[in-house]
Image 1 (cartoon, rainbow, N blue to C red):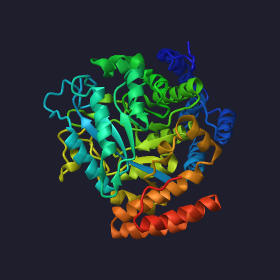
Image 2 (cartoon, one colour):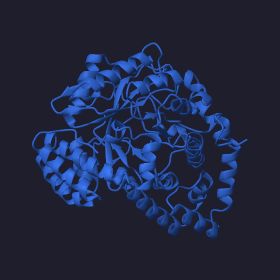
Image 3 (cartoon, one colour):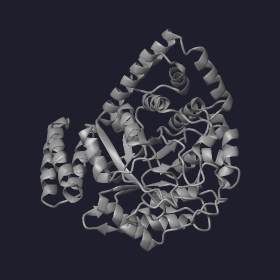
Image 4 (cartoon, rainbow, N blue to C red):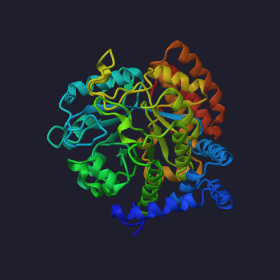
Length: 471
């Protein structure tokens, strides 16, 4: 039985409820009075549920789709303005005991070189990332209790936070590692992590078990209930995501939104982020083998629907996607992107991009400076801000600020100040010129006069060598 308040995976992600939802959506995809009612509700900017979103997804009326896109653009602007948060993944180890058939790190892959960073190698990777200008990392590791125990992850986090190179500092470490225990989540919280990220891959239980034939990840319930354990362990910022292309996308959207509804119903706060990866080629993985690939237009529609359905969540797109796809999705809801990513273990210290230990092929291979300049030329403010996490504005405290609109008095000046840091320390002359002009223009968009004045003063301080101001 479907119950969003249940702590059992098969009750809050209920297969029969999803099938009923998809049937209802197909039957009502041309029901214009209902569709109009759904769009009107979406305009309240409080979200719509999985059933309503599924009706909009099934509807192929071009006028409705365009109205949906315009609404997604406006909601993104209302909640996140024109800011885009920057981050980079850091792969610590590709040792893994799971048999996931879509990932080249699966343990049956005997020709991929296995590698685990030492703390000195972690240090060198972090310095390379700091020298680009990154302030926020998402650490990644395969699931292997011998090679990658939690103690190793915690040691790496401590190393990352300890490194201060020139003006560089990693101020927020998000963690994307395998589902674990409440006790371990408490340890991660105590280590000062930001968001705990765990992709579901697919919400279809039968497909999930087939895609994860061996290893601890085979346990669908344990994996799906991980966010509840993380919340119990004190981590109130969690990030969801499915790997689009593994299962039918209509099923996945319904399941993803049900998971968000579940977190809101049980914990009073939904997902801090939702990621949108698609299956990509890597080593011995052929994405065409999964037979559920989605085209760019469908991908764009999914992005817009997630933004409309969960208006407060941060939405992430990675360098799996091309520059063109990323550009389109930035307009429709994406609020965080990676830049200059290397998806191989130890990849940032290699002058030539290594491919032998990549988790997936990188489509957007531009430097961070190039991505930052592109964003600004497209009208977006690249933000390296980590202030909310460091000021304790996480979980329901962050969401209440976001939903009230008061977050703009924090996020907008923080974005401009961290952009100024990047321009002073890492940018090319061309990027610096464009960025300083943008900062001058965007200062007037800070809502409160007092905050604006303080921000202007801090930006001058940054130009004179001071660092790390925040609201």
